[in-house]
Length: 78
Image (cartoon, rainbow, N blue to C red):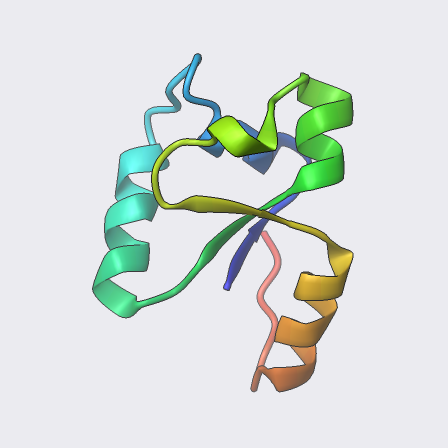
């Protein structure tokens, strides 16, 4: 999973396309990896409706993040 938090949430904003969003979408499709956007940050910090995210992005929360970390071999943060 690629969990988008803080400024990374902007990758999923359909009103302000980010130049790297398409690359992440292609990478996620190629490797069958879900792109998850923190719904709290999306709604509260960027007024981004989670039902209107760019294609390929899904809304999630820290529960999904914690479950993915628990199942993962490693965690990479950047």
